[in-house]
Structure formats: C-alpha cells, structure tokens
Image 1 (cartoon, one colour):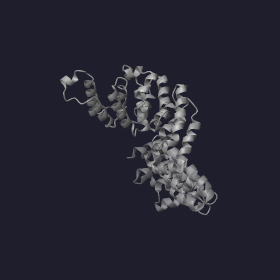
Image 2 (spheres, rainbow, N blue to C red):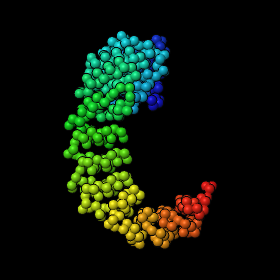
Image 3 (cartoon, helix red, strand yellow):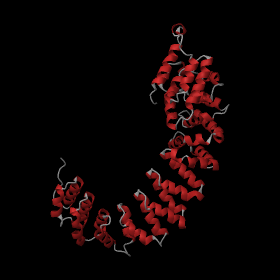
Image 4 (cartoon, one colour):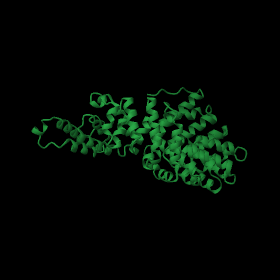
Length: 433
C-alpha cells in the first residue's frame, strides 16, 4: 500500500482522539467522528481503506453510516493493482488486534443497509466463513461495485468461497459497466494465469461480453489507457470480433510501444490481409523499429507480393538487422549477386557500416582489400564493422592491420579487433584494466 498523506494521518489521529469520551470536555472544537470519516473518504487515498475497515465493528450506528459512505468513495476508480493491495492489507495481521478480526458471519447483517462497497471489502476478511457470507449477502442486492473483488475471490484458497464468487460474478456480469470491465482487464489476465480452479469457462463468458458491439467500441477507444498485458488481450479480442477493421487494428498494434505486441501483429498480417491492403501494411512494416517486423515484411513480400518482391528484397540487403539481411541474401542467391550490391553501396557511401557487415557475410577473401580501406573511417561504427568483416573474410591475412587497431580511440573497435585476432590465433585478447 502507498504511504498515508500527512493529512490522512492527522484525520486518523483525530478519530482516535474523539473516541475518548472526555474529548468533548478537553477539545471543544474537535470535529465529529462522522465528519472526520467523510473527510477521509474524500481524500481518494487507497491506503486509508484498511484504517476505516478496522473501525467498522466498533462504530456506533451514525459513524457506521459515515464509514460506509467513506468506503464507497474510496473504492471508486481503484486500479486493479490498488484493489489487490487493499485485499492484502485488509487481510493483514495489523488488523487482528481490532474487533474486525473477531467478526462473525452472522454479524454481517449489521452492514446490510450500507453501501455494497462495505460487503465488497468484507469479502477480503481473513475468515473464509465471513468471506463466503459477504458474497452471499452481495447476491441479495446490486453489487457492481464489488466486481474487482469478485474477480479476486474467484481464485480464493477456500473452495466454497470460490463457488460463491463465481455465482455472484456470473450474476452481475451482464450489468457490470463497460468502464469497469475495461478498468480491471488486468485481473482477468491474472486469472488466466492462476491455477486454483479452471477459470476458462468464466473468462469465455467475460470475453463474450467484451465482444459485444458497444463493448468493442469502448475497448478500442480506451486502448492507450491499458497496461501491456491488457492491450494484448484487447487487441486479440478486437481482431477476432472485427475482421472488417483488421487494417486499422494491425497498423495500430504495429506502432505500439510493446515489442511483443508488435511481433504478434506482424504475425497476423499475412493471415488477415491480402491485395492492396496487405501491400499498404507491408510498406509500414518495412519502416518498423523492430527487426522481427521488418523481416516478416520481407518474407511476406517474397511469398505473397511477387511483383514487388525483388526490389524489396534488394532493399533488405542493407537492413541493419543480420537476420533480415540473411533472409534477403538467401532469397536472392540465384538471381542477384548480393556481394555486388554491398560493393556498390560501399563505393557510393551508402550505409557503409551495414554494407561492410553484409559484405563480410557473403563476400570473398578478395573483398578484404576493399574492406580494409574503411579501417581509418572517421566513424567508430564503420571502423568496427570493417574489423568484423575482415575477420570473416581474411582474419589471418589482416592480422597486421588489426593489431594496429588495438589502440583505437574507440574501446568497442579495439575490443572487436582483439576478439578477431584471438579467434584466428594471432594474438591473445588484452585483459581489461
């Protein structure tokens, strides 16, 4: 749980002061406990929740109503992480010294008229009997506010509690607001990884609800607000339910900050698109910052767009990623001399570091003379690429040149030269200082 603010700590101390029956004689200006509880509820601090919960059992009737209102406001808009932290805190040992720890299931009737948020929190009680009774009483009223806590209890360690939570979650699912469903997608992804019960049928029901037209629109509109795993789930749901929007969804996923999502989207392009739509998306994929996506684009050009494949494969020869270059080299082996492309690029000053790496991959020993010209290049990245290429083309023959680079101003160039020399048995790599 996050730490309490100074304001919250002051209010909680004031609550303890007003618990003293002589406080009104000593502190005429002390606010009422109801007012203090309502003010705590307005702070929006999740760390306040366990402190209010711990006072439920001993609270007088008017204070109890105020505590219920405070908890109702404090539970509004909690993130999934905050819900899980609250669950852990409300079950924490630090509450065991209060009357809350000794709460019995039959006493829950006292909270029946309060906000369902109170019963939702009581589903986190340390006693399985209390948790089960809280779930049963939630079933007697509208309990949409309890949705994230129901998801937690679906994986409760007590089987009757899990059953009660499943019954209640299925009951309220059709009426849970879309905003709440989307807000707690991370709890659904968590459920998909847990193993105390088979959550597959329940998750399928939730996915069906999320696949309804209004839910899909809401889900797509709120994609930027979702966490990484939740966006992955959302894109899978959207792509499955909206094949007509495949281009828009895949283009958006290909630009996502999540590398795994970009890879997933790239793998779906060939399955979902064809013709002009495929060509448009491939043009975007070629410019991706992810090598896997670029390689997937080159592969799809070769397999699905033969009219554009030769030009795109030749362009891929100068890709910064070795796997992309190697795929293009393999596909063009029969129709184009890849080494000639790299030699021409070096003569023209086109991406020299990449051209040197490519020539080292497909060139011959005779190309060592051209490569050695770049050992004095002003850019360290080019010098390092030249060292690597020489090592593959003629490492032993270039030992003298490479030895001279052991004192290069760039540590990376010097280390690469040392590694090449060591590989060819010309000189042991120097020890790091």
